[in-house]
Image (cartoon, rainbow, N blue to C red; front, side, top):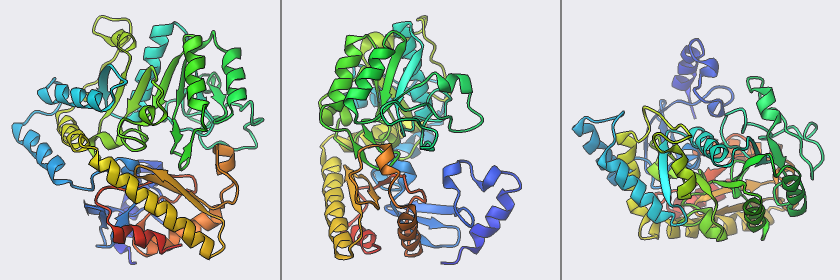
Length: 424
């Protein structure tokens, strides 16, 4: 594929934009690719190359690019002229629809990004408990705030023993003192997790977990791990937060809390709830959410919260979820990918496995079981890189990082799934 216009845009961009991109995850060698439009399962770059999209805004697109009902709802709001700084009927409808979809939550409030939502959830937890420290799982990404951007894809030479992970600063701009106060837990190690929480129970305001680790691919919790977290946190008055920004409406119609049959105190949602439009949410127990009521002890402000365009997209998207057909189709297609990828790898004597559910998936080039960050890190970066590079040159848009995650939409047809498998 020729990408001359992308190369030219990069030369222009790097004079004004660090690295030529507005998010570091969009950087690629030898230069970023710049896109012009999208439709259904496809992206089109400025050189008119077409790509079958399996990145989908890091999982934010669930109905396909430019879904007609979502676009129609957005156009109606644009015609009305209202955008931001005001409450709207759509904001109420969006809240009602989300709580219908996630019946374990009692109240909800909107923000603009996953990072914001996580920050709000942790502030609510501190307000409700009077404690200050938080705990997270090693390898999990919960946004770029200093308290959470800790031990995300850490260097294992610095990470300490598996049963007592040490907080590893992810970048030099973090507040080191804040980052080092974050307690890091080993995913899927119930005994070590119990011991660490018990040791710090009087300091912890919250434990936050991605119930299926999707920012390093797709790693489910082992049976009992999530239930034990729920029991531990409830016993010690610690707020349990599910980061459902990726798992929400994908691992099950009601999110990971439905899948595991465990109710957290708070949850964060985003990505797929508005089919790519910018919105995130915090939902959960009424008494904790009420901490942020106007005049209450915990602040929650934001000019763009409940932005009318995003609310319109969210209402249209969530209405598509109501019948359960979207989830059923995504699950069916993901199962097919799992089966076909395994068969193809076995035929070629390649140690590789694809794991996924509900339209989110990833693959690991390793013969070892993948159950946490440390085992996922053993996946062959060379084999992944070869596969991804081959796929992109065949018109499949994949993430460049070995520990990434990929997605499907209901716009992905059988031929699209077969095109992905054929690249192995």
